[in-house]
Amino acid sequence: MSKTLITNGTVVNSTGTALADVLVDGETIVAVLAPGSTLLGFDVAANVDAVIDAAGKYVIPGGIDAHTHMELPFGGTNASDTFETGTRAAAWGGTTSIVDFAVQRYGERVEDGLAAWHEKAAGNCAIDYGFHQIVGGVDADSLQAMRGLVDEGVSSYKLFMAYPGVFYSDDAQILRAMQVAREEGLLTMMHAENGPAIDVLAEQLVAQKKTSPYFHGIARAWQLEEEATHRAIMLADVTDAPLYVVHVSAKQAVGQLAWARDRGMNVFGETCPQYLYLSLEEQLGAVSEEWGDFEGAKWVCSTPLRAREDGHQHAMWNALRTNDLQMVSTDHCPFCMKGQKDLGLTDFRAIPNGIGSVEHRMDLMYQGVVTGEITLERWVELTSTTPARMFGMYGKKGVIQPGADADLVIYDPNGHTSIGLGKTHHMNMDYSAWEGYEIDGHVDTVISHGKVIVDDGEYLGAKGDGRFVKRGLSQYLI
Ligand code: URP
Ligand code: ZN
Ligand code: ZN
Ligand code: ZN
Image: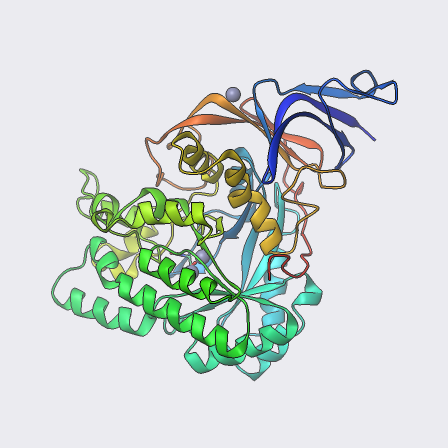
């Protein structure tokens, strides 16, 4: 088996940073050594097949994006990245594992949904992948099927308090699902927005001819995120089930999570780069020559981008620092403007919801280190270590230690990355939600299972490199 030594790098784990060499044997990390060390007189560097010099660079565990939607059928179309294109773009950006969502809808069997997603992904992925299960139709059959998920390596599932008629669950359904989750050790992931109330507000706005993307953000008011977050917490409390709230964007929703955690509950939350950087005013309210006030459709996602004048973005950074929020995923759900987003040209309700960011999460979050919002170790924790622990992959993933999968990224803090269409953009989209962002830092080398898949601006991997990760129970619960 081929042995590689990554020398002279600064190895960053969530627990600390050290100058160290990382020895990889085949697909696995076998040692983390003092730089240039010999092992009992044995010269390590002289006895490996390859040496990678990481002097002046960070060596970090590969990123784990625990919230993606490759080729999701949604809003009358399919998310534009396939498992092939989306995972390749992820690899370019230093992400070596994703957890995507298999889908079950009303009248469908959970087992069939999971099998269909296995079919879409198998043999097509550039990096490792796991699944959460969307249960979009809670009934006796799906509740029974949930009991088989842990054995399938699917230890988490998602419910929606939004999207009536699509994935929506009412309180009674949520309660029943949480009871099963409690018994089976499943982690409940919640899309916490009051969908029925949002739909009324949206209908009223459209009746007043307020049809542009900006009003997507007005209809999905922060009160309806806070309210749903609180309701989810109380349903979790009464069922004694752990709860993980996805794509948190309102500072008031973070307040609810902090309140629940202060009560000692197993309640967790993720946010996404869009909620840290982008806003209702600047993006949803944008106007361009090409699209007029439909420009904002590029950033229509749910939960929506929030008002900067209310300070939501800054509150999200604070919450990441104080651990009121535990991790950052992308909710990668890309749609092209032409032929997809433009379905909603005359009515924001018909714009497919989602933003593509899977390629940029590591870079965008590294900017928090540059600006002093988070530490280097917290960067690794938010993007890799906690996702691994939260979703039952830690030890193999999320850490540089002997026995872990050799999923590694060499990150150059002195490098530079220009984000945009035709620059670092490898996602299958006809625009970039991050056009013009200039990043301090650069993903130099990406290693998956010991194989270099990205190096110095070149993609060296292949479709099918990535494997299904059979996840265990969450390692994060108290
Ligand atoms: O706008 C979003 N978030 N699209 C993906 C589906 C979801 O709710 O996560
Ligand atoms: Zn959602
Ligand atoms: Zn999502
Ligand atoms: Zn570089």
